[in-house]
Length: 320
Image (cartoon, rainbow, N blue to C red; front, side):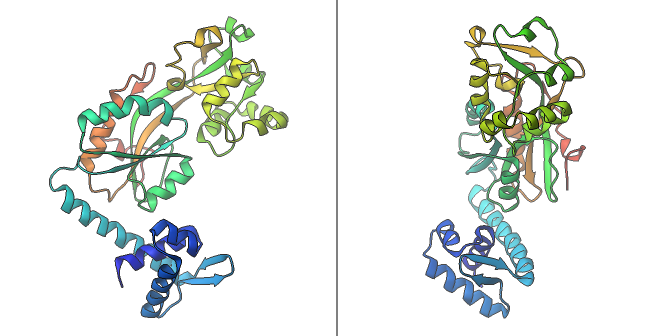
């Protein structure tokens, strides 16, 4: 039994396809298939049920693969300890960021983080929370930047800032006359939302349940927005298609927005989101979390409130 064989079975379980697993492991499919079969023979049990175009994990295989993942994480820990020595800020950091945070935070964060940890290059992945969750659990990512709530066994979280939501509208819109906007007023507008799968969409609809009825009724419009980015929606608002709700940090940097767009705050209690770091409890570089959190809080967050409690890992929203 070798670490490579364990990597292969974890990859097959993740991809549910021998060819895709071989590509992910950078080996040929025959090499991977022979190694998996050899491990099954050594263990004396089948790990996978094979059918044309389909791979299913056996019940015993599921338990063995979960243990293999833990073994690989421990082996990776040994390598990190050996290569980094006493410097936790040396070596690659695999960072996952959700779509509605990355474009607005990363341009400010990366130079600040580089000044604090110049020997720590970043491998960055933007994706949905659900995808990043799995990649964190599987050891493919080290730390996530996302929006709470986020609960996962074996994962810790630390809040770094809280930002309000704001309403974005085209210049000249009737809502420009209002100093503050409430949920009932929002529900009467042509509202543009991100497509399903974005946690920010869910947070908006949680604040304004009436807007869900609007989005269901405006089926044609919503289909055009599925999978859209906040930037795409902002441009659609600028053309007069409707209004939208955005996190504050996504509108605070619009230097030339005055001619086409206007921003208004919500009436109290205004909706907000808490942005946090998430990492596996077994992550061997705790100093990275401290430095990353400090670098985020040093970014120009405007109206966002920096959350300075470094003991957030024990606060509500964290999970062990």
